[in-house]
Image 1 (cartoon, rainbow, N blue to C red):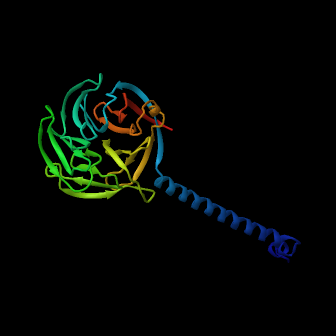
Image 2: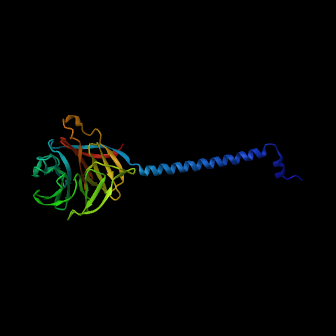
Image 3: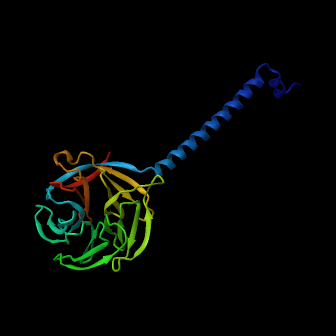
Length: 280
């Protein structure tokens, strides 16, 4: 008796159909593997590539159009502001709602004011090339003392433990708030490449946010690693063509952690904006 298996094997075309099915299954398997590999590659790149967000203006407040803003700090309904340019540098306390200057202290005419941070009852203000950080009494803006450091001072923020300082490079220096001694440093990297010109700094919900000099966006940084997490595109928030000064760039970030409010302004801008970050 001829078995069904033997009979099937003897029929014309049976072997070719079986081979075609095998090849089809192999190709299907290879295709599935390629798709899986592509998906993993996409996920990896998505994790490495910073996202870009937009903004919505919630409210606009008056801002001194002669204020060359270098540092900005929110403090229970008030703003502390550091201004720059030699002969015009100041530290001031400003009423948020009206922009009214409540008190201010002038820097020596040879000093160029830069970043500003609030640590307890002290305000600490960097200078650009003078290599000193001035210390003030929070309530009165009375100058108390100063720290010394090497190099330029650009931005300054307080993360609750350390002061974080930028100098225009991709390097952030973490300093002891009592002695100003360096504790550690990290390099800010965007897809593995250094991101330079980091200026004004602000801590926002555990992230370090920064202005990049002459750019219309904020950069969000992981303070532990220096990795760029994302950008907030602020293009169009203010028409800089209305100010005949090329220095009138975006600079100044302040955050109200209790009210979850974010404020931004620029050098010589007549407005300070409360913004909400939204999908782009």
